[in-house]
Image (cartoon, rainbow, N blue to C red; front, side, top):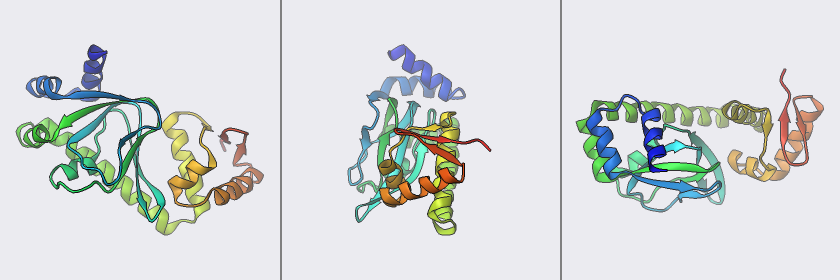
Length: 212
């Protein structure tokens, strides 16, 4: 399994300097998580930078009992929110939970700080992911401000479909409601309306999008 994880690193970060690659192999810790498992919970302290080698992690925050989706971390990506907390030792203001079986490479705080300055390729990875995460957060904010819950639901389902490569969305109404910061009843009502408009089909255990 260790050799396979080494391969994941090479595939995710093909342009790493040789010395940096060797240092990552030396100090990095691989952790395997089953689906729906917390990598970190809001309020905890973080002493590592997570890098997703395979699988998907959902980032979300919670306020007054209401959850709202931030963004997803896919294979070969880091979490810039985690990186930010490495330089400011305060409890994290987000939770990270796996969407499917996931392998995470955990990089220690001290080495991450050192590599960011020492290796140009590592700095480029961090800056690229910072831009991607910022754009995801900006898009989420614009969706909340500019669009109603029906439009947000359609976009949410389309994004999930694009990421998975399937028109079938295997999520409960409650899980969708949590991601969008609303109630299960609202999601059920809207999916019924969208089904009448021939935009989707609500099956017993999944939602099927209709390609137009």
